[in-house]
Image (cartoon, rainbow, N blue to C red; front, top):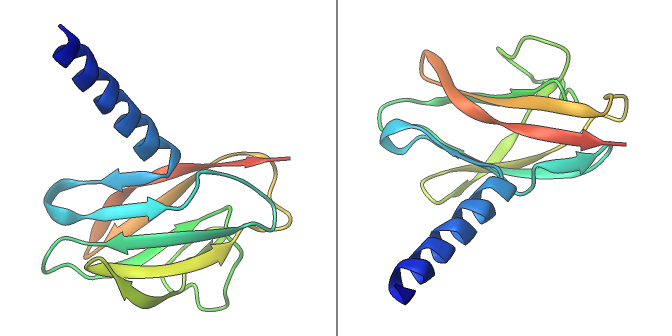
Length: 126
């Protein structure tokens, strides 16, 4: 009984840790990680993203992110994460939460190859 309880607690803690750090993983190695999922305006969010083999990372974007001036195919009021370094088989970068974004929950979407690859929610607090 103690082994089962210990395993349950370990899995629960791992699940909470993953949820709090903004991890999304789809099929075949697609991965999106935010260093935090609750922010305020002006905060910096660090991101690591990768796509499945054979698919390039198009962008990671959100209405909550400040426009960079090089937001490429991202459509909407917001911006994308500029990626500059490789990390864990993917790319890493950072972005800033817009100063004028209203408090609320915003989707951070990842696009790989020719389609959406999922995402995570980012909560902006006052």
